[in-house]
Image (tube, rainbow, N blue to C red; front, side):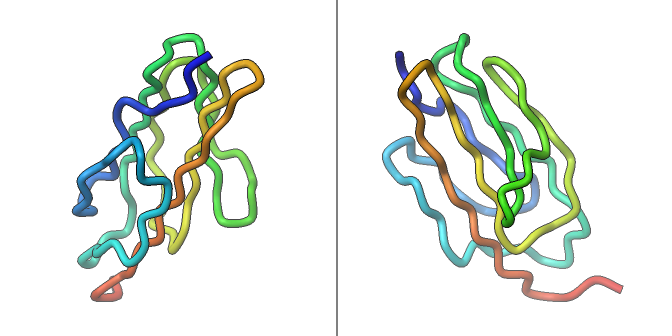
Length: 99
């Protein structure tokens, strides 16, 4: 089964997603308190998981997941399709702390 992502986006965080890139370091975020994460699997039957930096599952759906989360420094999106799985790591640099 296909464990590729079709779309991975985080609102307010400038990044161009490439399904062949699994780690995104030093993404820039200006004064964000939260971000909306959208992950859509290329395989509509695959399980999509959004995890925090300590591997706690924040959201889990089949085919796609959308989740609003407080801005973290690091989060992980994993796609599990039968025995095949891939994870994509986002590391965000907060440029201006919010008040």
